[in-house]
Image 1: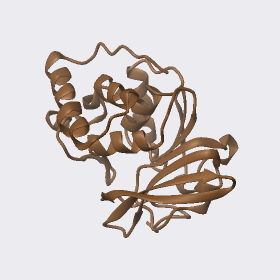
Image 2: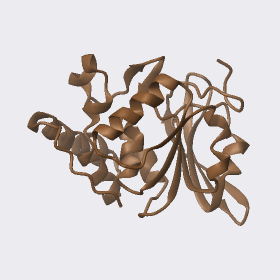
Image 3: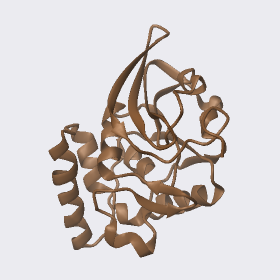
Image 4: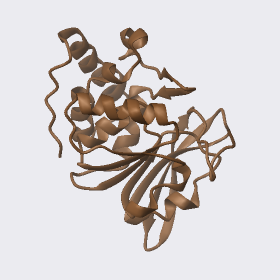
Length: 223
């Protein structure tokens, strides 16, 4: 497990972050100790545009430009809990954004790979993560719906945009026993699903209704 000490956050943001974890995340049922610790440690304001940093710990997604958002804190925590990380899993994230979800994942395992469709956001994420002293930052620009075949298989995959359905391309990159968490449905409303691979079969379970920006790509929505 990664253990980062962040010196760039102030007392007010630290208090807001602790309140966020208690009132938005624990209060809604997230109990995984590693996830709660990661959410307490990572300064979300670093990943939010300067003009929106006063909203960094609000119970809502925030625009990060390019038509994209940084997800609601509770949804970040819930999705992370659902992939059941224990310390050394290999994880694929689809949709890096400005890097916040990846920062949370890196608190739980050092082996995180992320694909971002928009080059400007991929570069911003790399800068944000480097500013917090993360050493290994595996981010590439490309079509996230295709996954990262060269690095497969993955113990867990987390998709941070809404798909029309669960892409077969991502299911095929799961390791045996792997978990995939993805919002799927219409362009404007989805259900969060968890897919588990067992004996080369895939079990699908519903988690909660949700709303994400569309997953654009070969196996997602058209731009």
